[in-house]
Image (tube, one colour):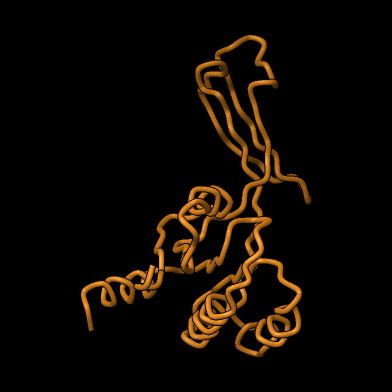
Amino acid sequence: MTDQMLKFKEMVEKAGNIAVRTSSPGETVSDFSKMLAAMLLYQALLKFGKKTTLDLAEDKNFKALTAAALNSSAAEANRNDAEERILIKLDMTKLPISELRYEKEDNMLKIILKSSQKPPQIEHILVEKEIEPADLLILMDPPEEEIEAMLKAAPHKDVVKIGTKDK
C-alpha cells in the first residue's frame, strides 16, 4: 500500500463523519465514471460503519440510480444528513461578558449572560443556524476552478482530493 493510501486510510478511520462531493453546488456533472466512483466510495464507507453523506450533482440520468443506492439498508443505518445546529455568537469587544450560566425552568432553557456594559445591548448577540462540519470532506476529481466553491459550500475539518492520473 502506498504512503498516500495509508494516509487516506488513517484519515477515514479517524473521521466520525464523512462527506463525499462530486462538484460545487449548482454545477452539473456528466462524467458517469466520477459519479459511479463517488457512489461506490459512499457505499464502501457505509459498509465500514462510517456516518457518511453523498452530494452528487443534479443530473437527470442519475436520479433513479442514486435513489436505489441511497436507500439501501446500509445507507439508512449510517446516513449522516448534514445536521444543522443553533449557534449563538457574542462580540466580546462590544458586549463584555462577566458571567455565563444557564437554568432549566420546566421545558424552557434560559441562557443568562451578565455584562459590565450598562445596559447590555442585544444587537451584539447573533443567533444563526450552522451546518455541523464533516470531519473529512472527500472531493471526487473536482475541476480546479470549482475547488474553492466546494470547500466554502461544505463545512469540514479536513479534506482529501481524489483525482485521476490522466489529467
